[in-house]
Image (tube, rainbow, N blue to C red):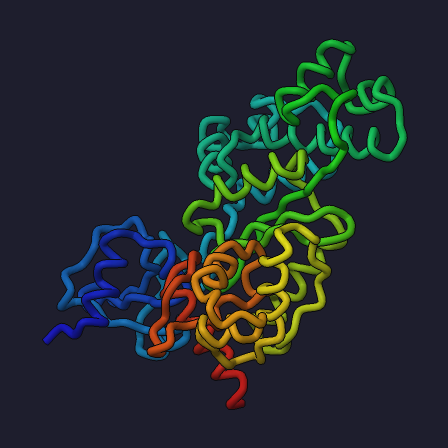
Length: 348
């Protein structure tokens, strides 16, 4: 007899729900293979499914990993094609990359375009162009002349540079605020996260399939008047290291500096959230009391939902007064996993 939880998992499997990647693994009894929920292979009947919380459990049960979805790797990990081309761009970031360059490296341009669109939402050429423009903006922001940025980053004409700058950054270089956030995708055991930071602080850390993420990023970009480009910096590197430590169970508190972005009330709530002990939970009502206004439960819930630095500001530790898991934009399956992960580490 199928339980309600098994039906929930099977629905996630048939919908290829990425929120369950790394949360559950399905062993297919008829083939002896285990997969991620997002596997593109034909879906088995529910009676042929066996569910596991960890890939190791599926291996111990005698299942072998699927060669299409690679369940023993990080969910949403970048393809070898993307890794190779990003490495090439980082070796020559000032180069004016074209689709033909991908072919010269050994990859079909149409395949490259499809892989980059799926992971970044833009083509390989657009990615390389944004990376190059980000370097030019850093040059200008550091006090360099616009003409030097133009020449050093491969633009032959002043008008061409200014047009390209305006297309990517939204304003001409002379009118830009010079605020730049570099963005990086970070793979985690329960799905890819996107981090955005300048050289001083982290502005955003979210699961890439969070509901409303594109609108959230667009609002932040407009409010700050900033440009967001692919890249890396010390804050992003620190974020990746600390996330790896959190997921491995060796870190319970994050030290990453956060931006001062948000309203005064939101920042009050977020600061309170950061005091919640690892592995423990509280209700929205309790959180409202913590910020000094027990009648502001709804306002606290909205501020909790507006948190843009998942895990760092642990909004996953806030639950309903009845103990139910509610209100997590990254998905309730992930919220359950995170709380179980912290509880397991505390018991070790």
